[in-house]
Amino acid sequence: MRAMTRALTILGIETSCDETAAAVLRYEDGKATLLSDVIRTQLAEHAPYLGVVPEIAARAHAELADLTVAAAMNASGLTYGDLDGVAATAGPGLIGGVLVGLMTGKAIAQAAGKPFIPVNHLEGHALSPRLSEDCPFPYLLLLVSGGHCQFLEVRGLGDYRRLGSTIDDAVGEAFDKVAKLLGLGFPGGPAVEKMARDGNAKAHDFPRPLLNRPGLEMSFAGLKTAVARAAPGAQGDAEKADICASFQAAICDVLSAKARRALEAFDAGAGEKRFVVAGGVASNAAIRASLDAAAAQSGARLIAPPLRHCTDNAAMIALAGAEHLAAGLGDTDGLASGARPRWPLDEASAKADPVFGAGRRGAKA
Ligand code: KG4
Ligand code: ZN
Image (cartoon, rainbow, N blue to C red; front, side):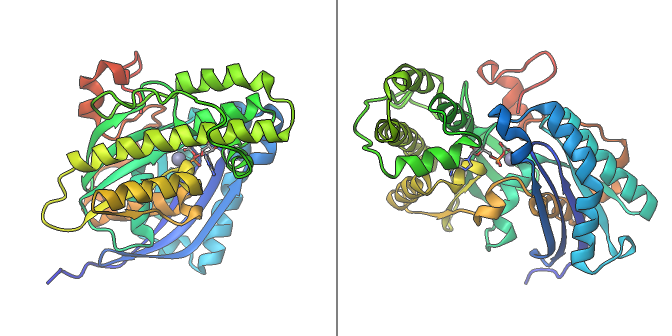
């Protein structure tokens, strides 16, 4: 029988990219219940620049952080005194925004006399399926977002092993770039997906980089370049739709082939094989469908968090904070933690693998 644990109520704060978010979560006996979940997106501020502008993001977070936290606390019906801890993203991400969330979280924790838990944003995504599903460890995770594309074995809380990642662009970044090339606005992912529905996926034979190479490394820069060559020739919406559909098909082929390979390499033990896809790109229906097919072929179950928790949110940060607090991490001094623009989940693999990019300032995420 599983031991009953004390219920924990945690405020989570997320400010690492272009969403200012706060959530209050109750965590009891391994089960999460959201008491509030506020997400304020800055899309309108960044849209004129066709991408996230770090300085604009930092200012917007500074303006919105207090209001967003207050809205989440109000919606939860609780006071700061009712909390058992405060968790905030401490990296990786755009440093200005990370600092805003981290300082807001530390200030609240200190004023209320509660533990502060610094959270790795990637760990938030990694644990996000556990917000709404019974998803015990271990599971295979594909994290696909604007900044990341990697396969991770999630073996337990704080126990992550990177199996492979992109050696250049992240998938979301490629979607954003393709949208920019075709004048579809920002964010690119949803615009390209919408356009792709009316296109012919066989119109362009775009490359599937590293598809037939062994291993789980991925690359999307060449695909992006091929789209850049084709884009000037696209006159109307029909031709743009063909490019979008052909590009998306190439992404689906690469991700599903690598997913099959990752599922073969992943040791789930005796139980069910679980394959989780998380990150903003996981909201793409065509990509989900091809990953679903790959999972079925490999005898695994695909688990995708609801759309709201695929993209950046504070519920996943609160959950990561709660799980760490429940595991005893709250005993360490979270207030002494700093903001980390780079912070890989699997630091050992990141340091050992030069392709992954150790970088002068430490391993990249
Ligand atoms: O996880 P996320 O909200 O932020 C981080 O990067 O951490 O992911 C945002 C990324 C953007 O690049 C966006 O274009 C992409 O996810 N995205 C999509 C879709 N919705 C969002 N990409 C493809 N298809 C979509 N439907
Ligand atoms: Zn994210």
